[in-house]
Length: 240
Image 1 (cartoon, rainbow, N blue to C red):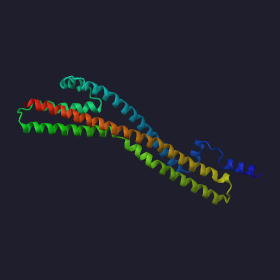
Image 2 (image 1 turned 135 degrees about the vertical axis):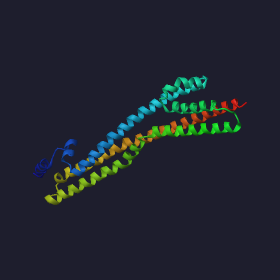
Image 3 (image 1 turned 30 degrees about the horizontal axis):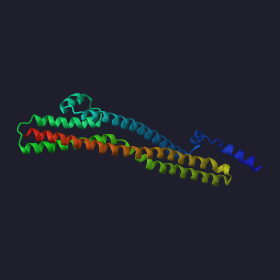
Image 4 (image 1 turned 120 degrees about the horizontal axis):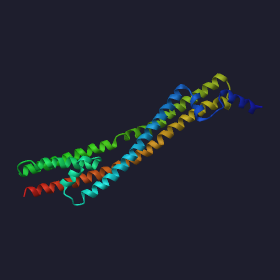
């Protein structure tokens, strides 16, 4: 008999525990929390997909460029060939260095002071270019960090609010039957689950692409240093 009463109460309180029904039945504040978490999850997945494509493209194009750079072809010839196709960070850093090198070659005089000044300008231009390119690649990673750290707490807010509603239902009905509190608790746990579903991929994506960014930064800075050394050697040859 008690089972039949509990079943009837569950039906009256909303016995359908599908995800959509839990959302529709939830308190407006809990609905807002759920909506924020869904949007955060979609946003983080968009960033994850974008970064996956970006790092894949950068890795492939940088490998091809390095093969051409170290093939022994004259730098001027490679620059003419790459000038209109600077579509990845390493090529753009190369273009910045070659532009400065072109200005140095057209400058009159070959004193030691001019050579030292040209070498410092090239180093500075390459360093600034590397920082600018890494900043572009790093963009949007902060979204993953924010979602990964904040989403569980946003979900916890929905959980606390849902449990408060469950206790209010007990107070209003003066009934501690599980059928009375189950809908509110289910909504609360649903908010928690959404928070975790948003946070876990964001944290994994942030760690993965932060590591990829660090690896690429070492690679790009190494290229810039080697390129600067080559241009410095050519400057020394021109002063002889």
